[in-house]
Image 1 (spheres, rainbow, N blue to C red):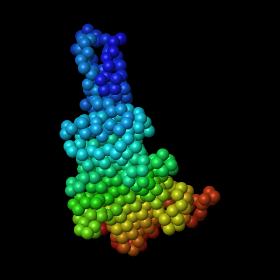
Image 2 (image 1 turned 180 degrees about the vertical axis):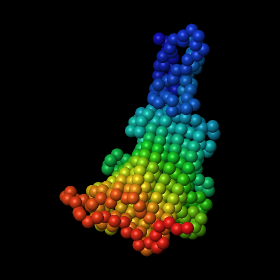
Image 3 (image 1 turned 90 degrees about the horizontal axis):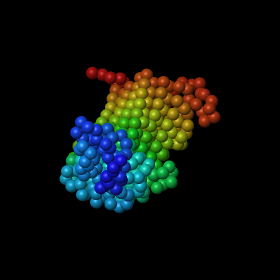
Image 4 (image 1 turned 120 degrees about the horizontal axis):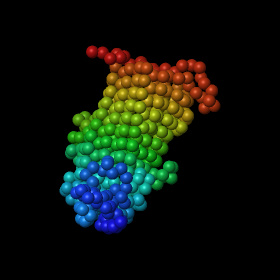
Length: 386
């Protein structure tokens, strides 16, 4: 069978026999397009007309080394797709300009970026690669001054180091600073020197809103798994009330395990949602610690989640001075040092907890404590009201 050389990667691509009556057959370079071709919409390949081959037109294939930033810049204002081979890519990467760029790696543990990634534009997608960001201040940051970048996507991306060897970034794995409508699917944010996911704003006019995490793992980070806090922008460095609250950042499915400071810290946020998430911890947070620490927030919803602790963890959640927060249909298991596994304080209004499976507490030795668990609600105006 005849073959033609792919001009991007040098692979020999076999040309099939075109049957009588066939107008053309399209052949793809499987070294560049290695799997799941149907998901790579807009793909191009070798077109064979009646047995005669025209020029191969694969997406640009970028080899390992320090040439990735140059390849991104060469795409120009029209954007495009870059195929990354297995191997190590060095240097920090920045996306600016018009965006519309996709990096396709060869696997989450196969294509490794040792530098950090800064996204300052729209519609950038990272797919099937590892941002290790060794020694950097963050792994991936989405930021743009004055108008937040939106509709960026990470899919099957790993951000952080290798287990506990401290070879990831010194700060957060993912830093969302002013980004909206970004999507993260089947990602791993693990073994970062700071929080796994850090959501805030350093800008005067832009919040960090409506970002969605689906089936992601946030594990083994030195700070919180997820930390969402009020902005730090404004005159003289004081928080600007117009951007004080991060809104509608949602986590669906996935798991949050063994993060040193706890699973989540939520301060001054609105409409934060955790649904169908598996929370586990073997970290000793202390008898006064909690997995979810929220204060001065509104509409935090924790629903259909599972909680298990084998470490010395006090409460599951602590919502102080919150409004309209709900903790519904969750299952609590394992060792927790406090029988009141959740607390709404006297400054809470319209906060409820319904339909939760409050199993007996298990001690470190495995014996059960007969006393039932409960959720303390000493807040004002309990429940919903018109």
